[in-house]
Image 1 (cartoon, rainbow, N blue to C red):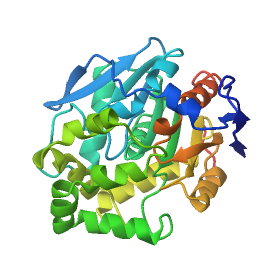
Image 2: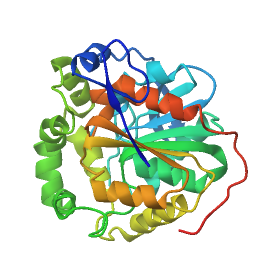
Image 3: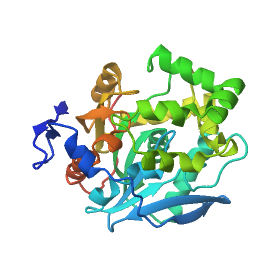
Image 4: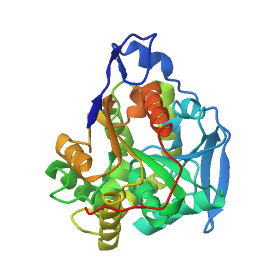
Length: 327
């Protein structure tokens, strides 16, 4: 069932409440990124991450076109219940930049490599957007090392006419072309200059905009975004990526012992009502919570996002052998 968050005063913000105005969120949002940069090497690539807290490993994986900066106001809250680690995906933030096309499996292997290099066990994943297939793939490939998955605005199935709106598919098809990738993604930088502002429910400050743009200040540095768009399967192509996403989707709808949390944005890009309904029907052991905001919920109300995640983590039982149901 879907839990709708009710309205609360700005001074009384428990889980299950919704702020009555935007004032609360503005007070809880900072542009600062006060984390020490840390690196590991995966297959010769330097991968960047930041962390806060200790204990239970909680791995945060960002989406497109952002980087670990998007988690800056979530980590301090959730760090109260674990060791929060926010990864910069290959080519994003301070991770090394690719210089040639990178396929889906390579992106996924980089995430697995970071988790392995850090020696993280029995992890909890918090993922969204392009970070969601990376997290879902890791869970599918390493089911005995994942205690639970929290996600929103996620790719729970491959992008096909059945699973995505025609406008979304058309946009990605254009961006995947050589001309679209060159002119729109790299030269015009539309993902940051136009799309980012539409995916946040408030006006980003000048400091926040600068932080998001910093890793992608040049034409060449934006190749990573183009590489991700190229790796994302649309209407069955690339086939290997499509098949991988279909495999993890099938797996997610049969894993009864894997706790799942789906946050639903009130102004979604991906999580349209029909897709939310499908996920709620097919994913067992799933809690669904609706929050006010657009695609990047952590930029609208990071304290609310954090509170829901913390409450859900508190309900996750110790890991045991996986049990599957029919999909």
